[in-house]
Figure 1 (cartoon, helix red, strand yellow):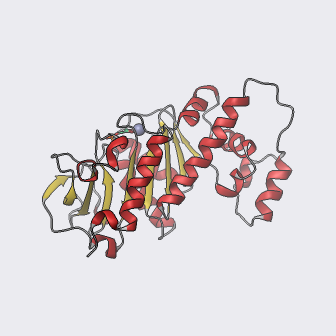
Figure 2: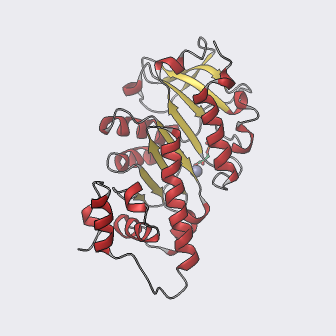
Length: 268
Ligand code: 13P
Ligand code: ZN
C-alpha cells in the first residue's frame, strides 16, 4: 500500500485546505472540510483507535467513513501536520459515535460544525448520490457583501449572477441564504441541510459559506466563483453602475450552456 501522503485523494484534501488558507478564507481555525470516502479510500486507514460521541443521530450514514478537519485546528498547518489536524472516522452502527481510524493525534476531535457537515451530506446524497464533499469557510468578500446587501436568496443570487458571466452557468440553482444563527449547533445543521436539498451553496449570514460537490475541486470551485463575484460587487457597489448583464442575457447564457437555472430568481 502507498503511503497515505502519496494517495491522490489525501493530497488533494491537504492542498484544498492549503489553498483556502492562502486565499484568506480560513483565518486561525476558521472553516472546515468533510469528505465522504470511497470504499477504496477507506482501506488506507487502519482499525478503530478510539470512539468520539456525535451530538445527533447520524445513523443515516452508519458504516460510512469521512475525512474531516479537526476542531480548533489552523488550516495553515493542515498540509504540514495532517495527522494532528485531520481525522478519518467511521460512523458507528448506532449513528451516535465516530470510530476514529486515523488522525486527531493530539487527542482532538472533529470540527464543531460536524452537525452541519453530516446533515448536509445526508441532504446532498438524497438528491445526488455522487456528492461527497462539504466545505465551509469565511471568504472575505462574500462576508463583506453580507453587511451591505440584503440577505435575501433571490436578491443575492441575482446580484452574484450579474457580477460575472460565468456565475449562472456555475451555480444555476442560485445560492441559499440563512440569517445569522448560532454556529456549531444541531439547529444550524438542520437549517443548512434543508437548504442543501435545493442548493449546493448556502450562505450563513455574517459568518461564511458552505459549498457541496462531487469532488473537492467542485465544492472549492463553487465557493471560489461566488467569492470572485462578491469581490467584483464590493469593488463596484459604491460606484455608479453604467453597465449590467440584463436578465434576458442571463437567461440566454443559461439556455446556451444547457443549465437548469432557477427561473424565479430572474425578472423576465
Ligand atoms: P472548528 O474549528 O470547530 O472547525 O470551527 C471553525 C468554524 O469555522 C466555525 O464555524
Ligand atoms: Zn465558520
